[in-house]
Image (tube, rainbow over all chains, first blue to last red; front, side, top):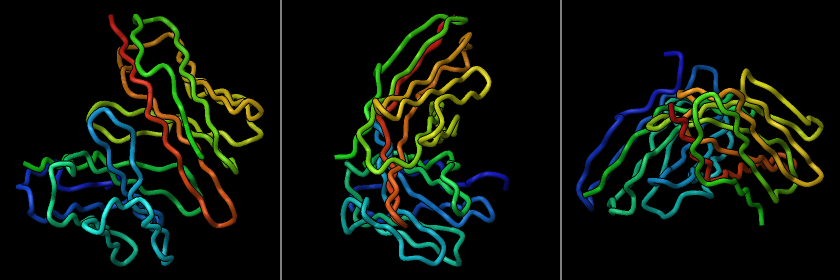
Length: 113
Length: 114
């Protein structure tokens, strides 16, 4: 596709369950970012992948959160033992190497009941 | 502490009117400043990106200004349209060597009414 694709678009889960969110970046974009946006709040940086470099995980809020990027393309954000405060929109963005403009997906709206 | 503050928090204007959104930052070392537009339920979309040496940059009806001395930026929207209703987010990039950090503002929520 032409843009950043995220799936699922909506996810409802029960407290304590694990969830996986997927991001397909734009082809050729070596940088990939995950953000979290709670209702009415600004974007909260979670993790940043750049090529083969070690990811910047400084934004991950707890060890329940992890992310992988396989083959330098698709990324999966995993939240283990979900809590109600994890409810938010999780946004993925990608960018070309050396460029600062990020292209965002539509996000995954996670609701933890 | 690196911070980006935006004002006003929200704004309501009538269609056809102009408006200006403000962004003040304390980010060092400064690399660039971006304005994004985020429609409800969508991801942010880049409007402009400005480096230290740029004072003004336009994108259609959107004009961004940057004063690196006072660390202020503004986004001016001319002849507003209903489709301009969105959240406008200021993002400042701090870069030191190979390390880069993006500092996101909380955004200004703009509503354009008919």
